Image (cartoon, rainbow, N blue to C red; front, top):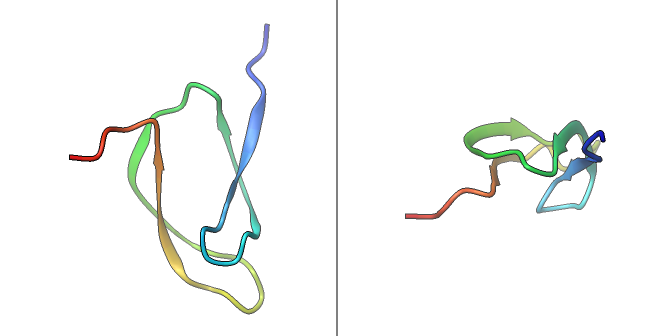
Amino acid sequence: MKNKKEKIKCPFCGYEMPIERDKNAVCSGLYVRCKARNCKKIFEIRINSEIK
């Protein structure tokens, strides 16, 4: 059975980025720039990782 993928949203404006993740993905320390026309802010993608 395939894992359903979901898109990453910008935490500032809510724009759905052209980035997808699996339900069981683990990530931290990945920085991307928002592609929305009026936002363009840089944010970190943290998925299922413990904050220390």
